Image (cartoon, rainbow over all chains, first blue to last red; front, top):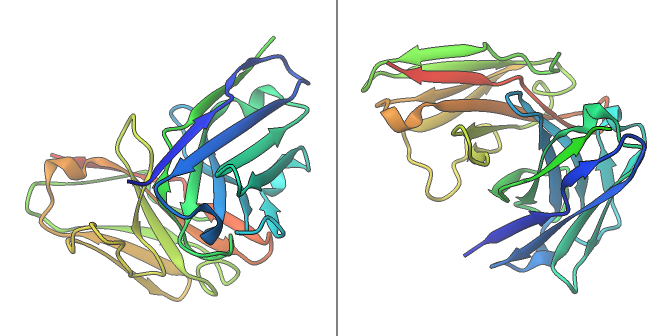
Length: 122
Length: 110
């Protein structure tokens, strides 16, 4: 059974940093690209970032302005999202999602985690 | 405001066929594949359709996708109460080199 489990969310002050993790099981992690998607409670989905199977290719939403960094450790079956200079606008539920291809520019989203909530507030 | 435009709501009665649209431009839908996701409130999204009209294994054939020009559509036939959910389209955006979502359509089964 494919499983994706996010962690690392919580309450953080504006301007601080946070690192999210997504531990996967049930499939060969380094055969697939991965993504992060966020959702403000009660609002729509927003694609955040994607990473290729080997971590060499990454992409980000323009709205992030270079504050987030996606990475992966294929030996640990873990996807990461390092978030810096957090603002209230980053408050959301963050999901990790599996791609159906090695490239993050190809089709994706056949498996999702349950999300980890990030709240940015003083 | 989302790059892809979806109507905020749709509705139908059990057994009916409902179609929802996703409108974009030449730099996204017009030049790339469209994916559709279903999100039942309180749960994670689920991939329904990829590459315009392909269903992942386990998705019933009641769900179908199509694309024409810069617009795409998702059709649900034989509507069921469990289809009540939010539906999102997504596509690759050439100008951003990234993915964009529509704002979502909330489907109500009357």
